Length: 140
Length: 311
Image (cartoon, rainbow over all chains, first blue to last red; front, side, top):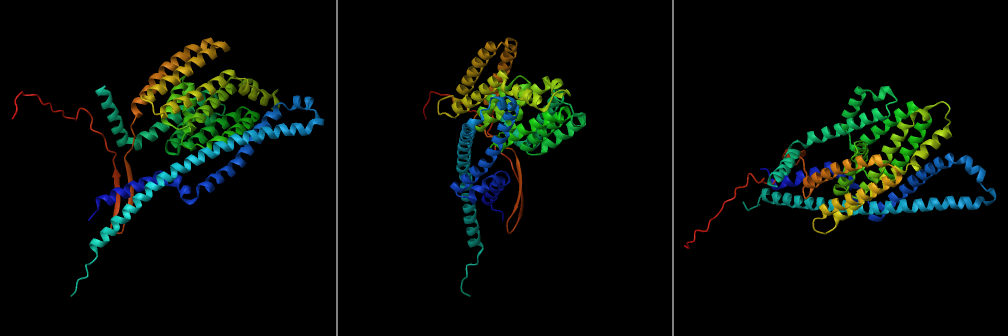
């Protein structure tokens, strides 16, 4: 006989698996610190690449004026200013990365917890069904 | 009011029943409209901007994930720009890459808002998207709205300066200089971008607060702040002719955002889901239909009159 509660739980779990499981899976595989660190490392690469592209575009545009006005004796100072901009840019970008993935981890874990609760409930239903169908083992 | 509430329930019921059809239709409509806008504004590559190709691409977008739609539309824009000038294409491709690197990897759920902001901006109602985004999405929506405004003005700038950008006399540095000056020197774009981002953030923050009628207060505050700053800003910059569109756009958007509030406040739109699974004994093919609250017409109110007699 079909157990109604069992079908309800399975359906809800299946819908979760279809829609959100893929997104929540990394939260089950990683600790919070590892998950956030992984994305911060990715952001270091993407942020640096984006900064190089943007600064490259802006520098190419003003290259002529820059070469005229450039005081090569103060090269260290110019590189220092460039690095300062880079650090400022990366600081903001990495802070945003930290906040986004920290929040996402919390939300994902919450959804997973609900999923596990349903799973354990399902397990209990199975155990109950098994006990009911098992022969009582009376003496012959 | 009762009739309106019935409509709300009906909308929920219709979405629950036909959500699987409504969603791809809406995605097709948005993609098709955006492709038409690209065709009118840019449309330099005739093969990619032809109506049959537009229809096929819109149809593809209807069934693909939302993020893929954005990439497809980006490729169409780049194709058109390649036909205009290689330099414009190269600079635009680099700018798009920066957007992908810095933003798109963060917010997969709100990227579609970028597209809607572009469309809203073309139709003079970007305030509707900014307000709606603040009501329905998280803080990531702020950047999506900003990206949409940036893309809209960038594409419009190219469309307005296409003759100069495509002329054989323009060197790569001239093209780059023209493109960058239309970004950094476009005061209207910078004003619009900052104000709409502020509006989305304001609406989001107030809507999330615990005050009474937070949704209504959020809408009113967002629109007031946006309208006052934009009105003053455009007047100071000397764009007095654009004030008419600002007023018309705001009136339509305010009405639209109130409809959004009415339809989505405290309502979780769920669509009918069809799932398959199995256990040791059976295969299950389940159709899960969302529960609908009883609409007022179906409610039966029984009135008891005081008879003045005690039993």
